[in-house]
Image 1 (tube, rainbow, N blue to C red):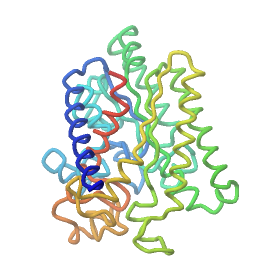
Image 2: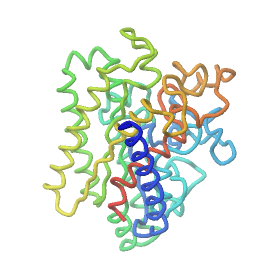
Image 3: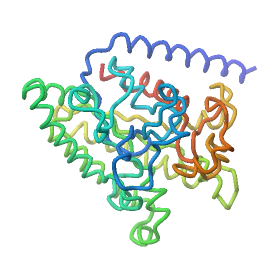
Length: 355
């Protein structure tokens, strides 16, 4: 009986906040643009134009995006920042800064500097030869110059200070750096590495603050031990979540939240919020049927066990027919439906504060 009551309460809460989120969309207009930094969780195509193996600008990626168009997003459709842009009353997608199909007129209401495979630590970006965070900031500086030339100094500065800055990275620092490279583990315990990343995150926020950013969302990291790839290679309990990795994610998220509290006290005029995807994604993984999904332990593309990027093409005959039934699109990234549910949750619980 108690379980049934809780179940119904959860449904009511979910639909209440879903429609509340739609109300926020209708009331949009206060936010002039969204500006994105981060990794593949938010990259909308910047890796297309750089020399790296980590790309997704080919089928089956994008099969549900605008009629089946691969864009460089690591999903079958949109990623969370696209939904956030829409919820703020802006465009339904955020253009990648390095995409030659867009120019400063497009970037005036939203721009994305994120690069799949990157992290707070420069060593992370070097693993797959992607754009390091310092270079994302360099592109942002260049963007500011272009924006001022296009709109004039006063209008451009207003956009820079009133925009919402969406920052999402950290998972690669652990999975593609700390747990992959013996040299990193020789230098740090996992807790010391967390602290190292927190120091880099603080430095990054300070840098974009000095450049004019005031409204910033720092994302936590997901239950990375439940990514299909990590389940597949979890030799201690194959197909089960790697709880060591999940515990590290929880620990790191606590430290990110503490950093946010510190930044809000130390930097005059700043407003930093914590967008934590961990709990909502973990709930989707553990109770998928609530969200109309069925499959959590493997992904849609290929066999769903290890495929990502070009491997999804090689094993395309094994891909699922309906991605909406899956929490994960490839072995590392969520489906568009998962991205939308996470975006709705984070917008109604945190990001609405910038309206």
